[in-house]
Structure formats: C-alpha cells, structure tokens
Image 1 (cartoon, rainbow, N blue to C red):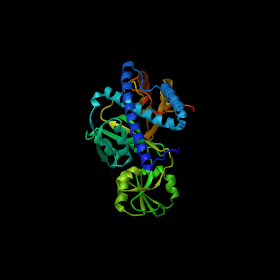
Image 2 (cartoon, one colour; image 1 turned 60 degrees about the vertical axis):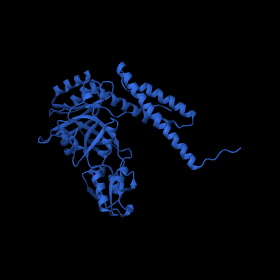
Image 3 (tube, rainbow, N blue to C red; image 1 turned 90 degrees about the vertical axis):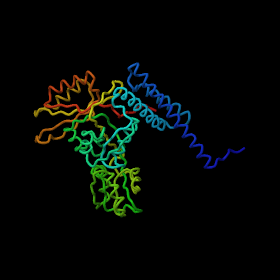
Image 4 (cartoon, rainbow, N blue to C red; image 1 turned 180 degrees about the vertical axis):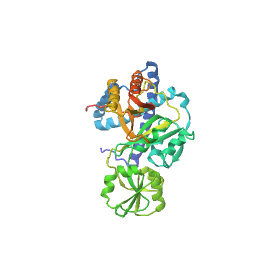
Length: 389
C-alpha cells in the first residue's frame, strides 16, 4: 500500500484551513489576555510577570521539540504573541485609567503623505488602540506640532531617534518650546529600498530622492553607487510621488517597498540601510498629558538646564543613580539665543506619579536652572525574556 499523493490544490486548501484555525486561536488567546488584565486590576499585579513568561517559553520549547519544531522558531513566534498580549492589556488598562481619552475616531497629524514612515508608525500605533483615524499629512515637523497645538488634530506623531542615524535634532529643538505632552511611543522597523517607476536597472540610476534621514541611514550603499545626485524631499512619500510623476529610468526613491506600491513603484534593490536592524522610535504628542497606571511599565521624559559649572550634569545623574532610576536616553541640544548653553533631554524608566520619581524631581529642581516634564507615557518596548535552549 502506497502513501496517498495530494495535488498542489489539495495541499494549499489544507494550508489555508490551518491558517484560518490559527487566526481563530490567536483571537481567542488575545481575548483571554484581556480577562487576565481584568483580574490584575483586582489583585494590583503588574501586567508583565517575567518569571512566568520564562517558564512558559521553556515549556513551549520542550513541547515544540517533541513535535520536531526548532526552539528558535518557537520562541520567535511566542515572543511576538507575548508582545501583542502585553500591549493589548496595556491599552485596555490605559483606557480605564484615562476614560476622557476614549474616542472612536482620532485626528492624527504626521510628516508626509500616505506611505511615509511617519504615516506607517501612526497606523501601527493606533491600531493597537482600536481607534479609527482621520489622517492629516503635514509638510514639516513644526506643522505636525502646530496642528495639534491649535486643536485641528488630537495627536501628532514625530520621529525622535533612529538606530542608524541617531537623534532627529529638529524634533528635539521643537520640544523645547511646545506646550504639548508626550503621551505615547512606538518603535517602527525601517526597511529602505530603491524604488523605481519603470523597468530599469541599478546602472541606469543617476538621481535619488528621499528625506535627508534615509539618505544618511543608507550612506554606505549610496557611496558605493558612485556619482549619484542625492535630492532631498520633505518626506519619503514626497520622494515616491516625485519618482512616480517623472516616470524616468534614471531616477529612484528611497522608501518602504509596501508604501512604494501605493504610488506604482517597485523595488529594484532592498536592504540598503547601513544597519540591517534599522528602527526609528516615534513619540506621540497631545495637548493634555495622560495618567499611566502603576500596573504597566512607564517612561518619563524631561528637559533641564544645569548651572554652567564643572560637575553640574554629573550631580543630576547621581540623583538618578542613587534612586535606582534607569536612564534610557540622554541628549543635549543648544539653547537658541544663549550661546554655549545646553538643554538636556532625559528618558527614564519610571512612572511620574511614583514616590521615587517625585523625590528625583525634587532633587533635580534644586540642582538645575530649569526643568520641565515633557510627558509620562506607557513604555511600548516589550523586551523579550531570555531563555537557554
């Protein structure tokens, strides 16, 4: 007796059936994670339990081995599932903590048109909040902020730093003078491609269009291309629009492949960033601050100006060290109009309402010439737990 041979159509039908079953199970699991969040309100337990997550992954790896599944494959899948569960619970708890923010529709401003990285980050951030968007494209970072300040938008999404090109200084400078508060963050993977409108080859390309940041993030590849004209645009979306309009075989845009499809562009070369692990962190700003429940990890961002004497900044950092407050970001920017004076931006992993953060602010206020909290918001960076196979 021989094994039955399945046709390709039969195989694909079975694969589709299994995929649909997986989706139903994932939806069921997500709903159960919501019930977990409700129970944690009653017990005042934090959303993340790293010890349990580690034990869960170890058990799943062992079960996977029995099914001949590679441990890395299993952990990769369940890291994603756990991240979704954590963020889903956080969003639920934040809605309960900030009932005034409950709205089925939100007006969101961002840099560039549809398809820009800021547009993608906006959609990804609010998809986790289950909020319908009214999308408002802007041509500059200042316009993004002004649109929210004037009440024409509820939120603004701004890139703040990239793993390859570093901090976006213009955004930091704008934060010095705005009355808006940071209410959220999201880290967006950046996948740069060379996008063209015609059937052409790399050898034909003479001019590249994009925002200055992608040019900088892909500098090594662009240098290897030789004598290429680099034209700057206000956003990657504008660059893609430009190439689509030109319809020439000697021009290309740097941008995201899926976004390029919106403008009828195709990728002639992928993975051109200096770093393959290329991410941009975006912040979300609003007119009113949010309150962050103590059950979820929080970040607080503040700016301060120290005295112009040796050791002033060190004294401030010692305060954080002594109170065991982890600082995840320190950035300095010149104070416009005050030569040689610096404004320092700090991100710390601490809830603004906590006793330890209030103690730190009291000490820092005494040591600094100026200090201002820019916002306290849920940390969206769900770090996976490590396990040994």
